[in-house]
Image 1: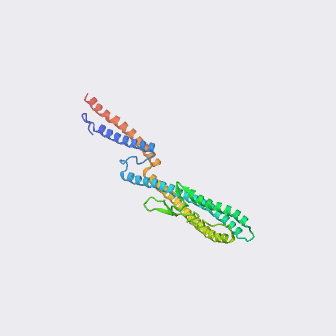
Image 2: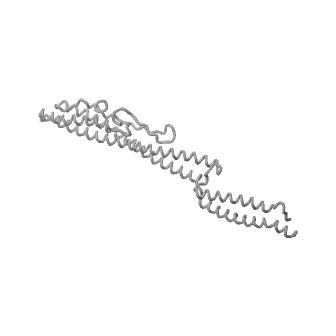
Image 3: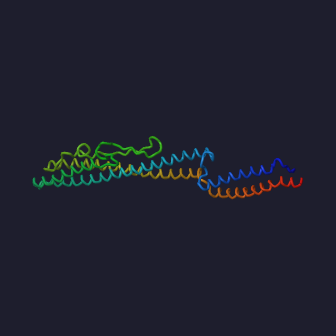
Length: 273
């Protein structure tokens, strides 16, 4: 191979190789320091697009999971209030059975009715005051509440609510235990009210179980998506470290070769001299 003074081909080749390996090293350092295999679209345009779509889905599933958790809390709030109403109805039925006994005096029945009416008022108070995030649950203003538990339109679970007001909902308003006849009528009305509350509690229990199942499923999907997205976007530390070592060696070799290539024109001049 001849020696050329004006154009040092060997030096130019060495410079090009050094620039290339230095660029790859910069990429190694960038990926290892950031933890990302894909930092910009230039790294992998298709991979970035897939990763961004997955990230959007992951964030949406996180929100859906919180929605499901809120739905469970709402159901628990309603069920807790219904449990209180159920206890009140049971006490009212006890009073009705007690007042149905012909051995009770009118005064005793009147005294019993005072508690009976107070319990009626308490049921209405519970119905009007039971709310979740300002949503009334037991006053009849809402028949259902839709919980968005997926990332697509229509991925909802409808939670059925019940009206527990003593008038429209339970149909026990106006009842009393002032005499045997009225007490007997109250027993029949209270039995129907208790059935209504028990049915509503059963429905809420089924909704809670479904929401809990969906919540667990959402967590599983989110974890799988996160793992898949990580495989696409995050750096493989072992591979990147090995590539860093390889490029470091190549850079050192390129620097050495460049140094030697730059000496060649001087050798040619020394021969001429």
